[in-house]
Image 1 (cartoon, rainbow over the protein chains, first blue to last red):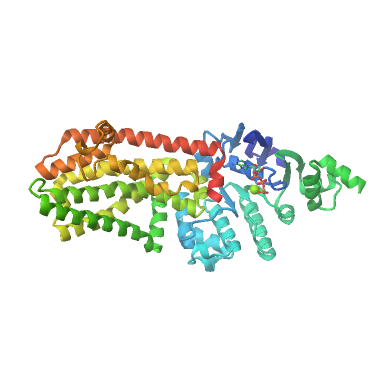
Image 2: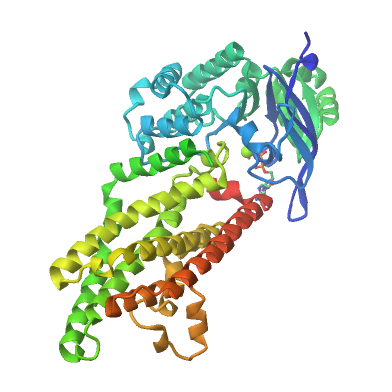
Length: 258
Length: 266
Ligand SMILES: Nc1ncnc2c1ncn2[C@@H]1O[C@H](COP(=O)(O)OP(=O)(O)OP(=O)(O)O)[C@@H](O)[C@H]1O
Ligand SMILES: [Mg+2]
């Protein structure tokens, strides 16, 4: 069964957002299928976080619609959020609580059945079981990133939105975290929308990527396809070309003239 | 409304206070300072003008203790919200399946706990230092308390809305908002003292004014004024409704302007 035949978990139709008359996301369309990891790539300010915030209901779209699990997102926001979760390196859990206290609070919010067991399982998964009784605010950036991911998996989400989840991880931990995310994702068939500036992340974790440039989709496909199409040596090279010239065609041209 | 979610959110604040008891100091320090000042003033007035108002000490202390019900309830809502802003936790809450009402209910409950701490302590001190017992208000303490709790919640939602609207720069409003109404709500003097006279209409439009008027009547004549009671209840319904509307429409506007995330991650 090809990806295209699988159930659509999340989709956006002509999703558009303007800020003060400037369009930062322009008629954005995509479909995320069941069990698929879709990477959202693009330079700083390309509109990735804006897209994600709209998909989470944190920012209202200027126009366009979102459907999740076959439901209209605006009408069924709470039902969707029960089955989804989010993590970003730019949010944190309350810094004055202990690690286990924070996870307990969110486990209860999500109605997790075996709270203690679930927390132990997740902390072990990300190899931070020894941090259980530590104060959250005293964790290193990398530790708190992994704690955020534990929080994001508490409710066994079918849909995960991860905005730069691996920012600030050292190469060793980043590698472990990538592998863990991929493993859990495959085992449970989770659908993930993923942004990252680490091309290694994208190559290893994502089945398919979308390149955004100034709020518009400029390329789409599997990482290999895109690299091939742009006649580049690596995804990193494609990224830089798109960021500088604005589209894949120009990127191809640029690489041809090299 | 899901009680499981509300209790989970309350648990978050209980863990917080359990871990940082220093935060409870604000529940103790300022209220005691105020109680002492008004208590001594009351004693002084009683000695020199006691014939005119024999229950002056009770009026002042009762007013100050009941005022704290408003203030603590308001703080419970506004500070709990700020706590989530300060710890960059707001997004985690907003992407969880939490209804606005559930979030507010948790902060209401926290406000209630804060009041219990402060009011119990003030009552004990006022009785031991000034021989004024809040139970002189008899059972009427309950409707007084209940009405002021609701007024405090309403002010709390308004404060939170203002912070959402103006950003963290407006943080000090969390402490200031109750004092916008304090001069007009006749805490330690009767409405009749408020001048110019038209301002008395403003005073009477505040639910809390009717509670304080009712309290003085109770302490002086030992009668419960039902008219004041019904006015307080009715106005509270209006206040709570308007405050709830202001809160939710401000939250919507914040989403529309795309500021919720800026605010939560800054
Ligand atoms: N609330 C806002 N008001 C005004 N402009 C905004 C707001 N939020 C985002 N923007 C603008 O929208 C554009 C897209 O921002 P966004 O955060 O989506 O980029 P991004 O792709 O996530 O970038 P990065 O890789 O740096 O995280 C930027 O130019 C940003 O300044
Ligand atoms: Mg971003």
